Image (tube, rainbow, N blue to C red):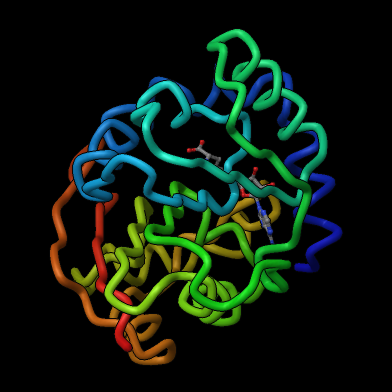
Length: 205
Ligand SMILES: C[S@@+](CC[C@H](N)C(=O)[O-])C[C@H]1O[C@@H](n2cnc3c(N)ncnc32)[C@H](O)[C@@H]1O
């Protein structure tokens, strides 16, 4: 699947995204701020910010930048930021595979239900690492391919179908870590049946 295809899919979701994926992933989003361990003035980048469902959960003392490929998802996020009176939040249309930020710009990077939607997750994580300060936290909230042999095979079988509707189910967390030079610092199950994971990594120097 191409970046253009994913952009079109999420443009299409923009008006119904909160209804379809709001509540169901909310418990994971609520864990985000805890894992990010933000401090006053911390610079946070949320990649694939979507309609901004995490924005109300993040402390106002952080400097938040959200990027997304889909202008229509971002338009919803902008409306939410306005309603919440979040004047300092920056919301930008950008491809996560080619982040337009200098190296080490952010203290924290959040990828909430994002990394399995990108055609090239390894490149996206490399970019997240590049823009995150050494020692900064990179937090993923996501479904990864199950390590259970039967469930893992099922994830692999349904992945091409799921990708047509905007996400893959066969992303292997351990391989992603190996391919991008990241290590898991903490991992905990989130959401329905614990098939989704909250993963915190420390960006190596
Ligand atoms: C499943 S949504 C998650 C939205 C939000 N983080 C949440 O918690 O609901 C994935 C988002 O990632 C965006 N996305 C996918 N590929 C992208 C890319 N290459 N660059 C930037 N955003 C991308 C999509 O447009 C979509 O808004």
